[in-house]
Length: 161
Image (tube, rainbow, N blue to C red; front, top):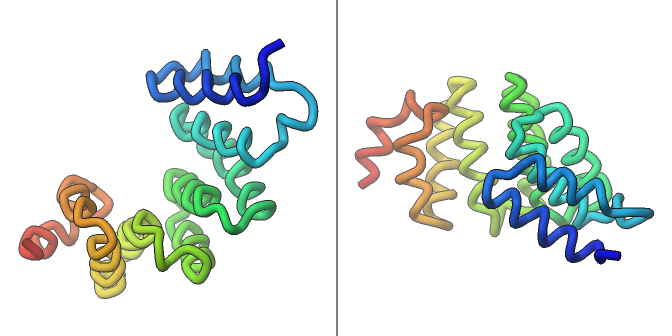
């Protein structure tokens, strides 16, 4: 019998290779209460993200945030699923709720907030959040210049230099 940890390693490897079906099979092979562990749910969230299964991602991510609010992954995934479902204001609200817990160290939280603010036409707030993300990790500026969610700010982002 293969251990849960081994199934998770296999599933993660398959996801890295874009092999969603094989990853799902590995997760399905996990038995008992391990299926509901935070670690398994985290990999399941990644599976739904890769498969673009937004409703399923949202459900798993919300459960992760409920059970383990200290894990930033649940918050970021829940917001992203909402964004993909066209529920931008809700996505923003999720990350604003997460900010007191994760805002000091989670650049992707600020980057995604910048995207959601920009999509909602709140460019002052978008600039502030993008600036925070870039202070934490300068690579976000490059990503922003290619992100359609931030298209309304591309000229300003380019000038950030």
